[in-house]
Length: 213
Image: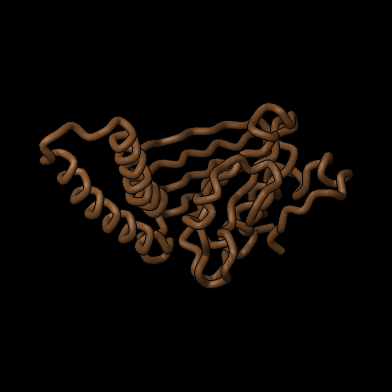
C-alpha cells in the first residue's frame, strides 16, 4: 500500500524493487521558522562587537571573569545564528528496505550518516517532546512552532536496546512539518514492519510524552 503525501510535503519518493528512497529537501529560512532566530543572533552579535571593542580599547586588561562572560555570550550568539542555518538548509535522505534503514542528513555545517538493521529498531514514531530527550531548555524555544504554540515535532527512532543511544531513542529532523514527519514515520514502519510504540513504553503507562495524533 502506498501512503499519500500530505499537502505541502516537499519529499521526493523513488521506488526500485523493495527499496524506497525518500529525499526531504531543505525547509528554507521562512518555512522552517528559523529567520527570527537568526535575526536575534545577528542583533546579539552586533551588541557583543560593541562590548568586545570597549573591552579591547580600555587602558587596562579586562578581568578574567569579564573575558569568560564575553566568550560565553559569543558562544550563545553564534549558536543562535549557525544552528538555525544548519537546520533550515539541511537535506535528509532515507533509504528504506525490508531489512535496513539508512539515513543521511547533510547541511552546510556538517553531515551525519546512520544505518540500522531491522532488528535494531523497536519502533518509529513522531513526538513533540520525548521523556528521554537530553537537551537544554533553550533548545525548545529555538524550535517553537509559532502556529501551534508548542515545541516542534521530531522523528523518533527507538532502539531495541534501551541503552544503545541516550535513553534508547534517536531524535532527528526537529522542526520540520509534523504532518510530513508522520507520513515519513508511517512509510518507514510499513516497510520495516515495526510498531509505532516500543514494547517497554507500551507496558509502562507512566509515559507522558505528547505523541502527535
